[in-house]
Image (tube, rainbow, N blue to C red):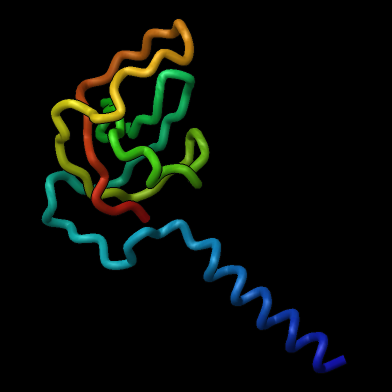
Length: 106
């Protein structure tokens, strides 16, 4: 019985570490902008809401495991033009302030 309990504790601990959404546990605070964000995903792309304004994320693969509406802390900088372009997935218009590259999210 003790072996089963110990095994389940070890597996739970290992699973908890493996599901950590941090891509960098030491997020630098001095790169571009940093603070709490909300992740927004829809058919037009992936965005973050920062200080009440929405910004399109160019490197959206970093937000793959974040659900629409989830909250995180991110460091990011303005990107100019996204290399992934404006892909047409739906006919919805979604206004945003600009484009950003995320350097760290936790």
